[in-house]
Image (tube, rainbow, N blue to C red; front, side):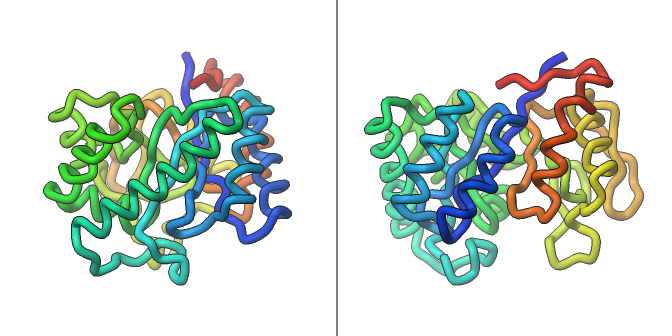
Length: 249
């Protein structure tokens, strides 16, 4: 069995953070690079692309609300046109750098509050998928499994990768536990590894409130800003292999 592993990268404030990102890259199959909305700048984007090319990763855009102050983790009161213009500018900036480096973007994954808002708001999800269909028809869309975004992508006949999270708790199979809930971010390596296997095989996990959940995913996310992300990544390949799984995009 094969499973795709993605990671949100390029979210640091300096080039040293890119070196830490690069430690994760040998153990994943695709990366989502911040493109200026919540984090990232031209230099970080260029280096992130270069490092991803070195490790032969699929490269995607990781746009957000234009809100660097809150790292894109708070909803922003912004008009639909302003939001879509910002998303276009963010994706286009990364795409331009990717082309200059001799590669292409493969996918898009929204970040933070925008990711969550699009899962909760059908109209927002439809507006975003319409933009992507018009401007970036070749990009795959990554979003939460069983989500509003998944339904919106299906309406536009877009390739959609159902995402699961190895280092986050769930409220139910359609919603992640908010980050302000104690324990919503998993900080035990063994727990994260076990969660990755369960998601990859679709054998079921336990929700934040102890309720059994069972669903299928196409890709599993490891957050690079998790303090133990590098140590999780270093053990991930061997742990998956022990359970008959390999990492592949």
